[in-house]
Length: 277
Ligand SMILES: Cc1ncc(C[n+]2csc(CCOP(=O)(O)OP(=O)(O)O)c2C)c(N)n1
Ligand code: SF4
Image (cartoon, rainbow, N blue to C red):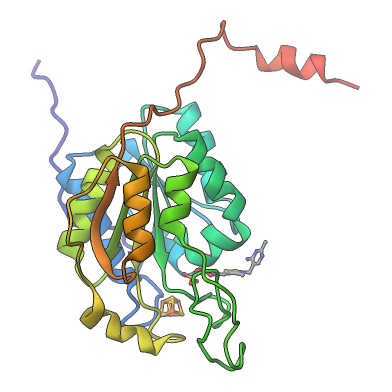
């Protein structure tokens, strides 16, 4: 009898048959492409990958992938992904969503997922707006972005996700641009390979509610420095860059979370008995 070898999957094999409902020109199409390329480049099999999301246009991504997926609850993608990874450490778990999902309602989970430094890759498709609910400002929206829903702008200081991730304990931090799927795919490969919590902010224009973001393609540029393993240096650089530096900005050596060695797992029936009223 000959041993069966797993087939080598192409990027297109990771794409499901479901046609995305994103607006024509939405940056998230290219994020989908980059992610399928990364999964293929890593030589992964569909049954060993799970993509978990929250709610938002960007959070629809699990449906468009041919691997395990969970389209969860708004702001709760990281606890879902954390639970999955702890229960199934053998899986490659990728958590994905938008800036509203991750930094607003999910902001607290973002801090603590970075602090726990579980071996996850967290992708945020940052369009600096709530796309799905028609254009409200998000935590990363510029204070002077003038719109029908925020006349004159919010006047609020934007959230700085990369620095907050660093300060909270993430082990890998990168910024990508959806319009460069080749580079984004390469960075995602490194993010997925890197142990611990890898946070990848992908600037992904919302062409419907932020048509001004079409200009991002002229603004992005490669980060002028090599990634550092010093979080303070990385944070200083990110705080003083123009927000359009693309590349791996921090590659850390922080020890990822491992389940403490415990005795044999409790029998669920015994547990139910203990808590029976
Ligand atoms: C608990 C809860 N609160 C609010 C909503 C409404 N809601 C759905 S998506 C969304 C924001 C989406 O913005 P973002 O996460 O940035 O994703 P995008 O659509 O821009 O990709 C909101 C507020 C919800 N579904 N559930
Ligand atoms: S509303 Fe914006 S984020 Fe949502 S699909 Fe359309 S372009 Fe993309």
